Amino acid sequence: MAEPLLDVSDLTIALKIGARSINIVDGISFRIDPGGRLGVVGESGSGKSMIALALTGLLPNVMQLVSGSIRFQGEALELAPPARMRQIRGRDISLVFQEPATALNPVFTTGRQVSEVLREHEKISAREARNRTIELFRQVGIPAPERRISDYPHQMSGGMRQRVMIAMALACRPRLLIADEPTTALDATIQEQIIDLLAALQEETGVAVMLISHDLPLVAEFAEQVMVMYAGRVAEIAPADTIFEAAMHPYTRGLIACAIGLETGTSRLPTIEGQVPPPLQFPPGCRFASRCPHAAAQCAQSVPGLQPIGPQHVAACLRLDQMTKLEVAS
Image (cartoon, rainbow, N blue to C red; front, side, top):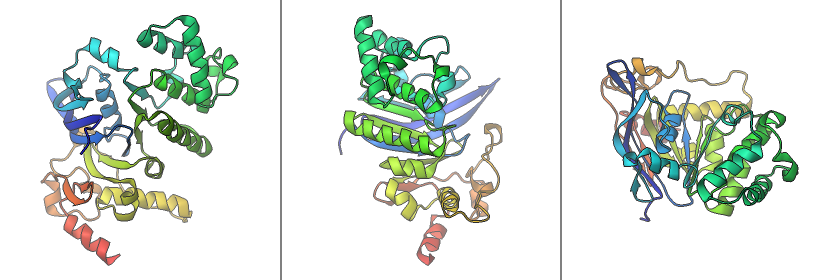
């Protein structure tokens, strides 16, 4: 097996509340190969964005990486000092935030903000940075880039601001691009355009992409591998085509049912009853048990580990035997 670009093993992130410490990301492991596409799916509160912040060394002070390893190109990022992370962040690993209206500085032009990344990491002249910025704007599909680099964020639409964020992330030709909910607050047509743009740029540049979203169909359309998270833990990991054809975790199946309901236009949309428990109310056993239609008594107390199902396919469920019977019956 080829050496992965990113290898995350048993990553645990804790929230500090006074003297208490609560694991909001609990024992997460995954890998991304060079040029690969990983989709990370889950409802709000599942810990997806916390993983992105941990990978880029941007965890807030109330969060702490308590265990596990993050190896990027063989380097242990969990041991890297802040100065080293500043070198890596933006140059080797880039992050596209979910809300460009707040991520972009309103008092500087969009062109200046992209040029600043280039000048910080590549030490080039202002003129060269401006020319590179124009080319990046053109690459991400911003019309009239020579003029639009002088626009402030408020002068651009949400879709154009997101393209600016992608241009900024790609400025230094990173090896890994993390897109954290890049289609949030965009209409369906613009969402498709942004996903198509990410796919085209990934093929053109060879950058590996980690796409974080709550939209399972959107992720499955883009990604090669999909990791489904629930309440800080991995529920299921499988190739994208397997997710819709042979998902085994009840949570993944619930997400698929909701997505299919939207597409078929049924009079009553399928739902997953309840909501993701807040960290202070995480149960001792399976964190999905209270919402799971197949839960048994053991699920409330025992923590499920990831069990192999097929090639590159694992799921964390204590009742996989029951789910397998349902799969055969269907």
